[in-house]
Length: 135
Image (cartoon, rainbow, N blue to C red; front, side, top):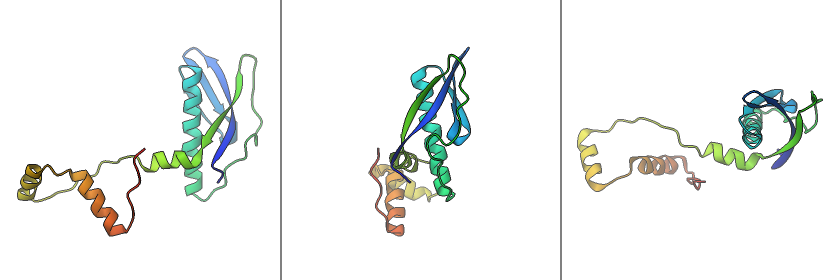
């Protein structure tokens, strides 16, 4: 997968802002302003791209599909850095619940232990991985 790619999008003004078509991926999104609509398009392309990569599918080439453009529509490009997008998404925190004995909880609280940090360090140690830098 290329690191950074620019895909065409079509911004269609409507009563609430902008409806955004992303022809190469056959998806759409929306935003209240042009800037928000472009950011939503970038996010949609990024998510779709890494999902396709995870499913071992090839990404469509930019301009691979015709754009349905009407008068008043805005056609522009949105760049997506798939490597950076994956880094952000993969480093997103997820909540996990765990159970420990009461006495351990009391002692850990007294010591000011950060449960999340300890669990992350322990899992990283067991897996033999290095914890990624937070972005």
